[in-house]
Length: 118
Image (cartoon, rainbow, N blue to C red; front, top):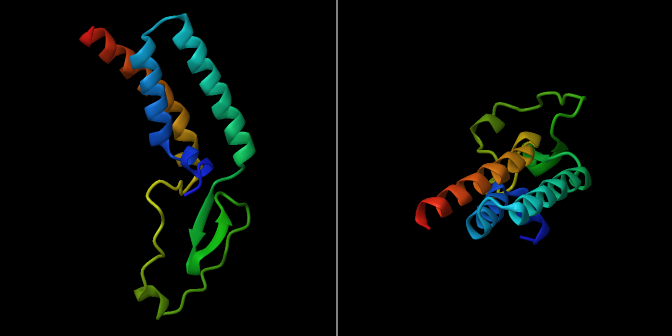
């Protein structure tokens, strides 16, 4: 898995947000880093483009595309399982977009945990 594809995972964004919150707490430096992180997330979404889904036979299609593909499955294809998808790969634009919210919530949880421990 390439380093850039790890950015597709909400887990990566949660770890970074939680680390900022836990390390710095709720102070100006922490808020600045989170604002930079959210800006970077928006830029990443713009550069990433639409999420990609795997469809029949491993072909790739843009999620939410306007043109709907016709159902061309035969009776034999119904018994076959869908191709395996990596656990961390987003399957839709919603999965990609959710990382921003997870980043913010993880930051909040990070400084709450810090406040409880220290």
